[in-house]
Length: 418
Ligand SMILES: C=CC1=C(C)c2cc3[nH]c(cc4nc(cc5[nH]c(cc1n2)c(C)c5CCC(=O)O)C(CCC(=O)O)=C4C)c(C)c3C=C
Ligand SMILES: [Fe+2]
Image (cartoon, rainbow, N blue to C red; front, top):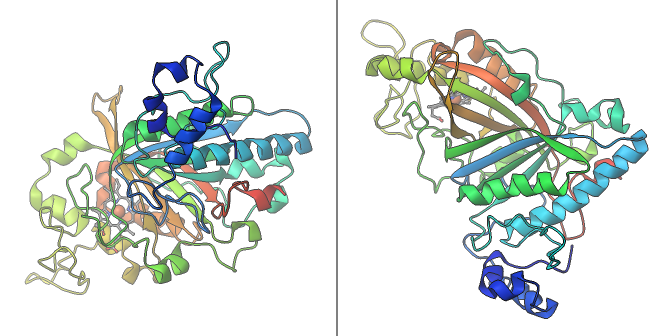
């Protein structure tokens, strides 16, 4: 990792002299070591580990998600070398940013651009996590990686009712940056694009606010834009048994470089919010199979009561309707299929064609095999879910997130590109 980078707070403390180029490197180094005096600060998520952060770690409030296409030219070998160099640089920069440091390579040369774009100077790490993934398109002929493609990284099939926008779908690489400060999250995807400007271009991006699923027992269940608690029966990141069973890729993989990793499915799901807001309460509750205010299943009274899918009402009909979202999605009714949901609400102005709000759920799910998990679930939801009347999938991505980086000097997807 580069020697010359320092804490964002430290940089601010240096004042104009340092920024004007008057400060000696020694002063900068002092700031950097200051930022390491505390062992495990509350606002910092460790970068190094067997799994990438941003999957099992507690969901933060904000998301900046981006995908990138590789523009490098030359032979497959040259392009692979360019990708290797990019990932080395990206990994070092991500490690620094997640710990509240500036992008490595600070410079005080008035005739060159600063290494870090600067909008996060003075801000704390805000629990930033940067999670990296490789798209299906990376395994075409361009890089000579076709035979390293895991079977689980199969292109997602058409899953009605979807109307996918190619400008909001796919990408060779993906970055999920989550933080408790929107500027810190955005700063990450922007600076990675900037660092990689000779090798990649950003393909599309999505900002998210308000996590739309809790993934930990200590988190209060958040609400999605339809006003319902979301994540009540999600996998908890600290439940190692469930994580190993459903989320982390294990020995079963045909590609050892993915062991300890996970597959990220992203779906930009637009909500027909105006129509939803006109729907009456009983119908809204029947769509999900849960009470709106308490979050309890329609067969219970408290949020965490286990839904009783067999219960029938006085009219002989199931209390949780046949087309209710939770009946169709629950693992009890799907041969045990589970996923880790880690999505965010989004809003991006108005849909020009309808004049309605362009808002919804940027659905993100992690799993060990999307063919058997997301695809199987979505096929079923797509056919019968009462929620379909109010939603439309408009963007999509599938990314293989390799295992974590275990030590400084190592990089993302090192085994794949070795
Ligand atoms: C293919 C997987 C899923 C998609 C796509 C999806 C979209 C979606 N979900 C909500 C809101 C809620 N989902 C809830 C539960 C739930 N959803 C899925 C899967 C997908 N959802 C699962 C596996 C589950 C858990 C089911 C269970 O075990 O009971 C809930 C209920 C609360 C909870 O447990 O999280 C809500 C609310 C929206 C709004 C949406 C698309 C816009
Ligand atoms: Fe759901």
